[in-house]
Image (cartoon, rainbow, N blue to C red; front, top):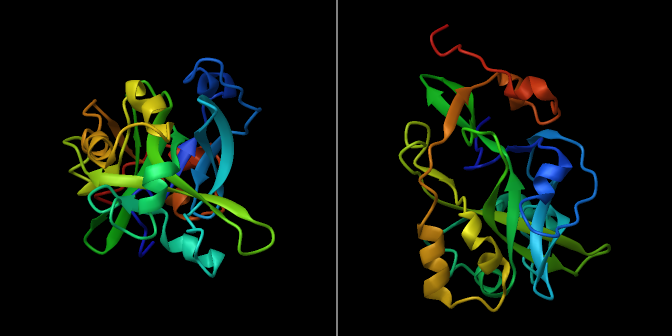
Length: 229
């Protein structure tokens, strides 16, 4: 468990029709429920094509177009909101290649003593939401690959008991503006990243079954209470 990044695992288990309802007219192919999405795996993202949102799956872990090795993506699964505009790996994507990463919950681990305990964070209604993301297209190898990163920011009140950071969860009213490559300058974008949703979040300790990347079943989100065992 050492070295897990902020928002290093998440879920997308909602029915496909629920996911599609996030955007008017969105076409979403049938998707299998996922309970333990991990870096380097495909993640469902929304981008803009001719002004219309469309869904595709991008590899999680951004590989800049100029990178020599696709393996760098494993180290770039998150981008900090405070520095994303100045980091060479992310700044061009922030200007021109923004996406929404769809999830309905994410995991965070809290260290207590020498142990780390997994917690599952969702909206109170368990409905899907969109995290601010960036994407890039790497063409220096065969095959080429499209990748993404999730932007993180300072934790809101609900999350501070677990971690000092969390993913940027955008308001639905900001979804289309975020993926519009012609929308706003750097200052406007930074303000959107700073205005993380303050809605109540539901936080539940879950089984350490989720620790293993290969485990991708409903058992990952089963409630558990072992903190004082």
